[in-house]
Image (cartoon, rainbow, N blue to C red; front, side, top):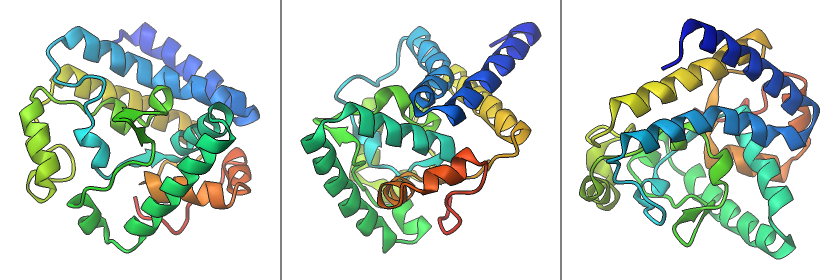
Length: 223
């Protein structure tokens, strides 16, 4: 992990990057990357993870994300996808949002719903994926496959999926940095169901101004 001095330096850098993200959409990806990269680095050091490009069993799970993560994904999509690709994505997003809107939170946890950001078994927003995704991993592909085939058995938080402690600790540490920044800025520290929240932004982009002003964007969504 980080020393006290390193932690202090990272906190200062996090404040700078978050404030820069509030000023310009071009900087939102940098803040997400700042939080995700250390998790990825620890994952690579572990070395025996079953996760690999093209494996997408976990991309059907319910994901909760901070408002800034959802905003970062929105800007990544609208700036990286061409007109046709963006239109196709928005169709997938609407379809999945309608699907989950009829589910309770508990029902969603035990139902496979393909993430609309999944294309050809790869995440199209990988650099800015939520920390919940960046830190989710497994030491056993067969167990993940079983979770995918029987979502009602394994549970909602990887319960039963063998994971590396170092990765989980780094994910928790980075989430702690994010929450410290949000608290310092008096911003919303809530986390929201990813598909529904992202769909709301695409349907009503004026919600972005609420985020810039430090106000709650998703008052009608469960976490």
